[in-house]
Image 1: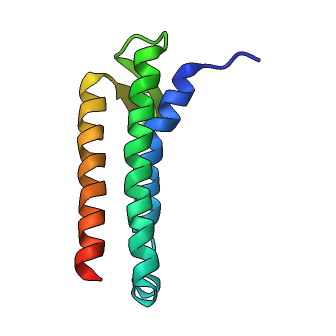
Image 2 (image 1 turned 60 degrees about the vertical axis):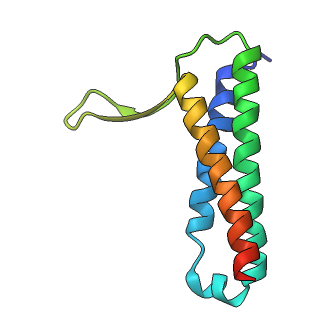
Length: 116
């Protein structure tokens, strides 16, 4: 079985934002009923996002892929409505995603303790 390291890189890069979007879709009524559980869940998602970004950076640095590389393409640039969404991984992508993940983890930790 041949494994493509680019697919792992795409999965790791998109894991953090996907978890944050899932957590953001949590209804307010559920979040209000269980504030401590949701607070800990926010902290866990922030930490998971940071760790997945660090793992993606290590995989890109140690792998055979030469950045920038297009990791994922959704849609098509041909047809009646040309619309395509792609994820391009280069050093700027890793830097910004790492900073945003770190900031999200710090804010989640601070806000949970502050609001408790």
